[in-house]
Image (cartoon, rainbow over all chains, first blue to last red; front, top):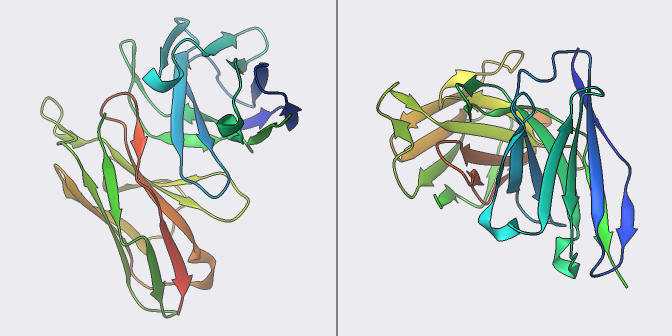
Length: 124
Length: 113
């Protein structure tokens, strides 16, 4: 059974960076795209960006362009999301999620598997 | 960006009764080349990650009870729980994956009356 296991929670200072990992175990890794979604406390879901490990191609929400970097390490079946220049409003639970389809080089599908979430708190 | 709007924001339904949640997209999410609606429904229980219930607007994910069903096309969609169970208390989100940025509705909180 495929599982996505994320790194632990952390507290970061404003202006610093955070890197969250998401390791896929028990299944094929590079056949699927992955996305990152965040959820601020008591709020809804917001897509941050995604990657297709097979091609290394990324796609970021305009809101995070220039601050977010998503990479994949196929040797360890791990996807990483790094967010820089952290602001208080970046405080959120960050989830990785697998996209359940790929057509040519385009992710096509819903998010069928989710990590447990990583709480990132931005605090001075 | 495609705006997804859910209604209502919250809903209280008696056990065994029907629950209906609506989702409207700001533009069509029906892709003409494959005639598929690029819409998913998720259930999120307190303290847990979202769980995929329905994709392609009406295809139930494996293992999801058949009391959950999705319908609609184009810009208007509905999630129906035919007979509410206690374990269905959660927040429900619709999501479009027609184009990036993928966007979610604001969520509908479902409670027991």
